Amino acid sequence: MPRERSNTLRKSSPNEIQVGDQVMVLCELQNREPMLAQIVEIKQVEINNKPSTSNVIKMEVDEQTTEIIDTKKEEKREESANSEENKREVSTSGGEESQSESKEREGSPETIFYVHYVGTDRRLDEWVPKSRILRQAAAEADILNGKQFLTRSQRRLNEDFRHVPKSYEDMDAYTRKLEMEHEQRTKVKNVEKVQFGDWEIDAWYFSPFPLSMVINKSKLYFCEFCLWYTSDQEIYTCHLLHRCKKRRPPGDKQIYEDRQASHLAVWEVKGSQYKEYCQSLCLLSKLFLDHKTLYYDVEGFLFYILCELDTNGEAHTVGHFSKELNSANNLACIMVLPPYQRNGYGKLLIQLSYCLSEREGIVGTPERPLSDLGKVSYRSYWWWVLIAVLDRELGSGRLEAGSISVNELSRLSGIHTLDIVDTFKALQLIKYWRGDHVVRISRKIISQIKQLNVFHAPKLLLQKSTVKWELENNYNLTTRKYSSDVEKFEKI
Image (tube, rainbow, N blue to C red; front, side, top):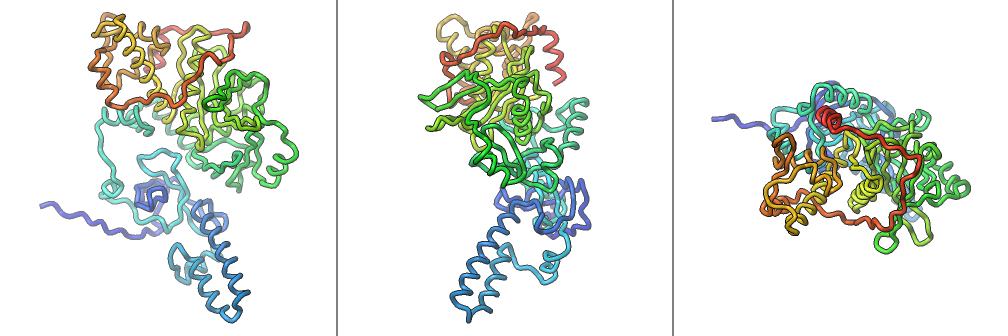
């Protein structure tokens, strides 16, 4: 008879925990449920300088409580002793503390731990105090964390249709080495929050801001119009009130506007002409993108800034995508700010990138590697376009049930052949026959794909007739051979 596992949780001593250890942590995002986490970094800080969101909230509650208690003192001075006792009770709302712990909070520094929750994206990494660490991980940690063991094919499907980080064991040796080096360099976030317009946004990842902006600072302030930034709130307020007169992205090349349905507009900004603006945009984007390498060398790129238009004619930046000059890639980087996500803006930018490729007369493809969220958005968009094309061709009788070559499907859809192969391979609907890749297709298969909910139609449809963009005479395109694309695809 198997032995019963003990689920008793015990407090871990901070002296026993080292970098690399796995522990059970009370996760705030999961209603303080225990989750398996790995210790990334350990340091000691004063309680007032502790970079923890929960402590900031607690300090604000303490200040409000103090004001209320002071008011009660003025009204009822004879009950000052009781008021002092209530104050101590409210200030320790997170739980009762011993006298030794109180002395520790007043004077000596406190040990805090930077943790990564196993099986989740690094955007959830955070600093936690020792009080949230329950114990070091044991054999039953996976059960407490609700972890499911999947086969390799199941993991790949999970990664294809959901933003789940790819595991190291599914990477080749070279990619694994690069990923581990990248993770080591950017393992700890250097910015906690960003003030962007009316939004205070939690940062997701490390971004290489100048050290003078991030040392002993936890928050940056961005002007949403000119993208000037600072770590000083007073200077930021002065900039908004007296210095910045801009109310839209720089330049006068507005290539798209839709005021009837969504009140959106897109500006094309040249990195060579507005270098500081584009550099600030890249640094801001890196806070929400794990794999982004372009920060300061922006001269060879075009940036397409998506903005929401208000009734005063002001353009509020919500996202962007960049595109390298003289490249067949129709998109290098895409980012939508977290407060504006799930509104269809990402797929609208993807539609615009393919519209520009169509006017250039090429079949475009995004630059690799794709981020986890970018991969999900692109995969859903490709499914939507490809299924719509196949459904249309089968309905018109121009295509018979059976199979269609990838090259023909690329011509009909405007999707690159490599992207078509990658998309249909996830459901094993692609095969290599007589020197070419072909897609198995029938009415039944299309119906089954629609029932799987592997894609969703875009919430916002691009009005191609309103896109005001033409190919410039000095805009040179480089052609790439299919064989070189295959080699690059296999390396990825």
